[in-house]
Each structure stands twice: as structure tokens, then as C-alpha cells.
Image 1: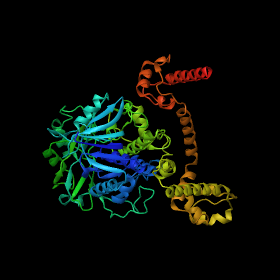
Image 2: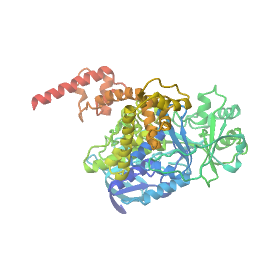
Image 3: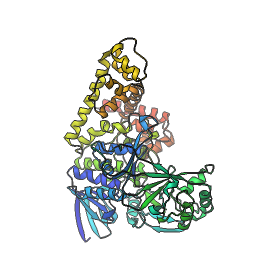
Image 4: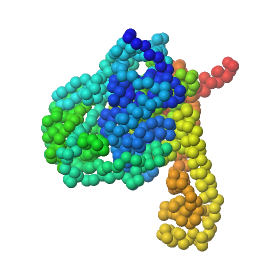
Length: 626
């Protein structure tokens, strides 16, 4: 070895997962080394220059509530902000923002390099060093040895990454970048099972070659919705995106050349994302559809590149040129960077504990696409949890394990470590049973206490949250106790085209009317100085009171099952009556609770009943012996 370095926490990979993990460790006062192949690629957006979206936007706000970085970075560098799904209920509202790709990368790198206790190294990790079943460090291509008590692997798509463009294929973690072959081999040598997944990206076109007059204009919201609860306002200039559609000519060109892509030619067996298919997958799977939406997204304020969202492809370059020029507005399109597919190794995450520590090697954590997920937001959500728990491991304290009832991050991690992930995992609001409680607007109310407990949220911000909670409670209580008479409120009800009162009632009953709400209450002279945020929370509490109460009952039942813990190392072979599949699955996953055991595919209600009886008998026996 030519050099030796020593850190308390070592993070391998400078993408969205690695950045969040590294910043957590450093901010909690521990020495952190962040190893990445190229310094300039820290925080790089490999695919879409955007943050957020359905369920993903909720995750970004949760990361912010925990004290993470992604929300603040996109607020500082975003060039179009929108709140999605406003025509539906608030449970599925989700913020999304286009980023200036280069500004986002620069801002992320600036925050990493200015963080005390954190040092960035340009290194390619080749081997994990393990002693007595515990990680002790890593060895790099430069023959350096990095010793550390805990290691977090956030390698993204770099593990034996292989890029496909038509008949061409060549190794790479991203286009123009090296892959990490030996690290993948090292993981397999330690006993980790692995698989292959693939993802893809669309071409980028030169802005000056596009005829925008043939496209629909997609504007952002005014004012722009913010991601971070601490952001005062968005300062970057805001821009438009543009919508167009493929057509039958586009589809014919793609269908005629399917044999020239890696997947349809049988040159890869890697599993792709079902929910974000390539354009050639779309025309095959949805042959009855005459068109597919394409959204042209600027890559930056001073960038001449445009991202062709919806046209992810691994077609040969000449086919990409032909097909894209059939779309309205793209007749003279100049592709500057061609689309490609990339396949890579991943580690099936049922080999992890709910704290994202591996079961194979102690003190080794995995987060991001190495766990089979897709998306910057899912990666960052895992990164902050892995970072928190690496510190908890160092301090000998309990892991932070967010559960399904309090965050989308909890939903995601529980899915990963409980279910068999055999395709790139993507979050959706439909994955959350309690999504009415897991809204984007209340992430601070749900999670800031954890960020404060782990030293990632300062006292000032936490006290502000407590004041907000108290104000919501005060207003909600007073609404029930203020009685209004017909003569005092009917004039306002007339203006709001709401039926008149005939007798006195609680002000909360009036506020529940859809046409009244808290804005109408303020017009009646009550709570006139209420903040916009508090008013929003009170409105939702009134409007969805019955639904929320029912969901709270469901959460109560869920938590009862989660509180029925299964001891570490529990011997399922000693439990008579378990089905063969149930026994096999529980031995592999080692569920922490009865609730988690019940969510394992292949574990039946009968298995759960047998397991409960066995645990009760075990507890009685321990009591007798004591």
C-alpha cells in the first residue's frame, strides 16, 4: 500500500446517496472520508435534471425534515417548480422541480467540500477488507488503504456497469466514466448474492435546433412551491418546458429496428424498470396507443442542451436521429449526446437489516441503486438513514428505523428488506397504506423531531416547529369552542354562496363547509393573523377529519403488530407447523417483528398464528425459568 488513511466513517460513492450519508456523519462530529472516482461528478444528475415527483417529492421533504441536503440544493438551483396532482386529494400532491444541472452539481460539491470533518478523495475502490466478519476498511486502485470502523457503499450504477448503444457496448458507470469491476467481485467474494439490473437515459438535443412553436408550453407554478421547510423564497429565474408527442411514423422506425437493441437482440438479461420504460418498450407494450408524450426540458439557464424526457432509448445512433426527427418540433433536431442503456450489478436488499446494515458483514451499510432502487430521491432517502445508522453503530446506540406509518422513506426501506426486489424499485404513493398521513406538507411535523434527536436539526428550527404544532392545536381547539350565531356569520355565508345558519353552532362546523374553510373563517373576523402554513394544516384536519381518524385506527393496529418483536437469531426450525415456504422466507429475511413477518411474500396468516403461539410459549418458558 502506498498510503494509509483512517476515518470513523467511510462512504464509497459521491452520488445522491453517498452525499447525504457523508454529510450526516460529518455533521454529527465524526471524521468522514468520501471516496469517488471523479471529484467533478459529486452530486451529478446522471439522467433527468429534475428532483421530486409523485412520492419522490414527499421523500425529498422528508429528507429535509431529517436534516438532509437535497431539498435545499434543489431550492437553490431549481429553474422550474410545480406541484403535481392538484386536481386530486392532498395525499398525492407532490412537488417537482427542474434543476440547472451544472448549478446543482456545483452547489452539492460546494456543500460537501465546505463541511467540517469531511474529506473528499478521488479513488476507485477495489476491495473491501473484512476481519472476523466485520468491515475494517477498503483498498483502492492506487494501492491506498482506508481504515474505518464503518463503511457505507453507495456505488450507484458503477458495479460492473456496461453501456449499450445499439450494437455497441462498452464498460462504464455512466457515459464517459469508468466502472467499478473489482469492487463488485469483492462483494461477491464476501458471500453477497447479486443480480443484474438495467436503466437508461434519453438523448440530449441542441436547443437551437428545435422548433418550439410546434410544441405545447408547460409553465411552472407561481409562486414556485419550495422543497425545504427552511427556504424563504426561490431566487433562480424560472423557465418553461415543452410538450410534444410521438406518432405512427416514430413507432414504425423503432419497431423495424428492435433487433438492433441489446434487450430485444438478447445481448442482456438484466431487468429493466417496468414503470419507466424506454421508448422502444412503450411502442412494443402499448401497440394500441398512437402516440406517447415527450417533454423537452432545459438542462440549465446557460446550457444549450435539452433533455428529451420520455424518449429513453438504446437504439443505434442513426436510428435515434431518424426517430426523433419525426416528432413535431424536432424535424431539424441535432442530438449532442445519444441515449443509452446501462446494466449493472446490484445486491438484493433482503440481505440487509432495516437499518441498512448488511447481514453478511458487520458495520457495512449499503444505500442507493446498489440496493436495486431507481431515482435520485430514493437513493438520498436511503443515504440519510445509512448515515444516521453508521453513527449509531459507532456509538453503540439503537438504529433509526422509520416505519411505514410515519414516512415514505420507511415504506421504501421496509419494502426493500422485506420483499424480493427483482426489478428496479420505484416509489409510488400507492405503496403507502397510510398516505393520507404521509403528505408532502406535513413531513416536518412527522420527522423533524428525529432530525433534532440525531443532531441534524438545530434548536432554533426545532423550536419553530414546536410553535407551529402548538398553534395548530390551539386553533383547532378554539374552533370547537367558539360558538357563532346566524346573524354574525350569515352575511359572509351569503358572499361565499353557502347556506345560512338557522341556529347557533360551533365555528368548526362552519369551517368544515367546502366553500368556507379557514379563509371564510378569517373573513368572519376570526384568526385573521393566522400564518398560511398553519391555516393549510387546520383546513386539511377539518376537511379530512373522518378519514384521518380511520387511518389513525389502522396505524394503531399496525403498530401493535410492530411492537410484537421477534428476538434476534430466532430459530424458525424449532417452530412446528410453519409452512415450508414461510419457514424458508423468514429464515432468510429474519423479520424484526410480527408485522414485518406478515408482509413477507409467501408467509401466510396461518404461519403468523403459529409464530405468535411459539413466541408466547417462549416468553412463558423464560418467565418460569427466571
